[in-house]
Image (cartoon, rainbow, N blue to C red; front, side, top):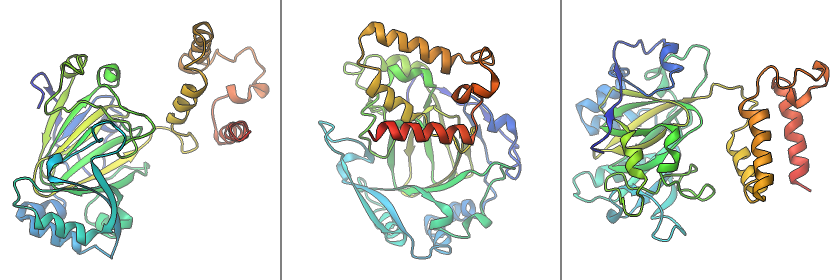
Length: 337
């Protein structure tokens, strides 16, 4: 745990069947103590790891999952190899029951191999699980995933959706950084990543401040929480989060949802396209494009296109599915030239 990190704010008494907007629309992280303490999965895990695994197996129907396997010497830290040309783990497909057997087989090892199943859709992997273990989101329809493994460390990364992460077996330590700490986190490659999202290259358990001196500033803005079975954490969109699973068996269920319509693509596409087309322009041209982005994107308001007749604003109109479809078609045509 970073010595300078402050504890994430905690709230209690939230009704898991009707999550309030004060949580779901928060722009700051919030620990939701005991939010899922009544889930049968949580109660099974509190009895023993064996009871937790037996409960999971009730819903198992021969599902194959994606897993990451690492040698004992990586000490649970899924990361790059030394020169960032590859990774220090192997990605495999295996049956969920085989993965659970492997975790059980190494439960008493001082330095076990690292075993991790991440972001697997619950309804596909364990049909019927959510009938007994679920949260109420009203009209929102989140993506619900399960994460399983032994003692692992996932490097700081961010996600576009808002997120509620529910610890159901074991304990996890979350260290969060606000989005504006990006320059101090030393982010690795955007297009070659361990699991899909760009990650911080800093090892939070032993940060190398000679190599990453600006991380000291990020550490001053860190927020941390250690969650036990039944606790949950709301992680706002774009907050960087580092996750440590602390026990020989750890299970987490999370809910992802976006505060934007489904027709809106992920902004990462715009970022990558801008890197390709804008970043390496001469400074004067880059400054001109900075002003264009600021005017039409980052500071756009209802006056930006007020001088254009409403029926002629096209892409400058409020975005809807039809406009998005037309823009996407134009982009594809340009990209395929």
